[in-house]
Amino acid sequence: MSTPSTISPAPGPAIHVQGLEKSFKQLTVLRGVDFEVARGSIFALLGSNGAGKTTVVKILSTLLKADAGTARVNGLDVGTRAAEVRESISLTGQFAAVDEILSGRENLVLVARLRHLTDPGAVADDLLRRFSLTEAASRRVATYSGGMRRRLDIAMSLIGTPPVIFLDEPTTGLDPEARIEVWQAVKKLAESGTTVLLTTQYLDEAEQLADRIAILHEGRIIVNGTLDELRQLLPPAEVEYVEKQPTLEDVFLTLVGAKTDKEQR
Ligand SMILES: Nc1ncnc2c1ncn2[C@@H]1O[C@H](COP(=O)(O)OP(=O)(O)O)[C@@H](O)[C@H]1O
Ligand SMILES: [Mg+2]
Image 1 (cartoon, protein in one colour):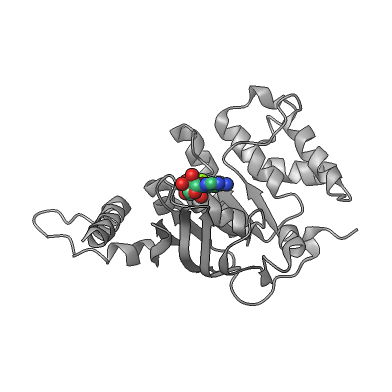
Image 2 (cartoon, helix red, strand yellow):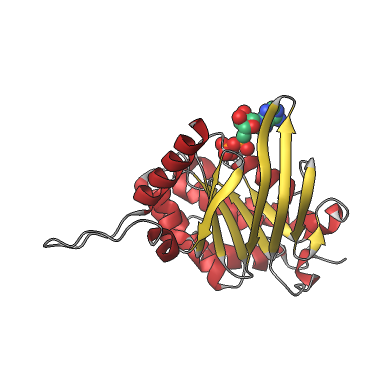
């Protein structure tokens, strides 16, 4: 039985998106979205609520068809090679999909069995260790904190070691401590070579985690770069006694505000 881990990475970027368009009846959500995600990097798709982040993730994970444009994941076209794309990715949504009655370890073993892996127990123990859940392994998930659940959810999505993982708003609804736990887990993921595309509406999350940040606004990527590159889009901070670097929030609000002003003219 082949497992997703047998898929060797194709050359080129892990994710390539060009001219992506999507409307729901009268509502145009994506008006030509372009970006690339390098292998082993963390890419944040940043945008306000309703900007179309989940729509992009659903197209990339083959749950939704684009109206126009192309998208390749792991070198595979999402439209024509959907089954292979699904084997090379994992998707973790905003709401945890873990079974509350089972223990953390039982949840992991169950999924490893469903994926026909040879040693489900060893796979589970390895993931429990990587996500700092070994001590809580035999406790029912119902007793877990929000951060522990989300970590377990991400761990479950990694069974079979997909090379590309989509995290749709991984920390929405979590308390500050739990967010930091999830951030650490995501950083470790990228260090192990997994490509991570995450969506977020939190500027600090993108700032903390991402190698590159793309801002999705009114159906397009209005800016795409490293945090330093984004900061340079603003005039340099005035030096008085203390130099203050613009935060990502300053950049976001300036760009989104500027764009909206221009379109209203
Ligand atoms: N299946 C759908 N049918 C109709 N409208 C949708 C559907 N999915 C999303 N939308 C709308 O598309 C817009 C973008 O949604 P979404 O991609 O979920 O945004 P985000 O994830 O950035 O918050 C929203 O206005 C949303 O209401
Ligand atoms: Mg969403």
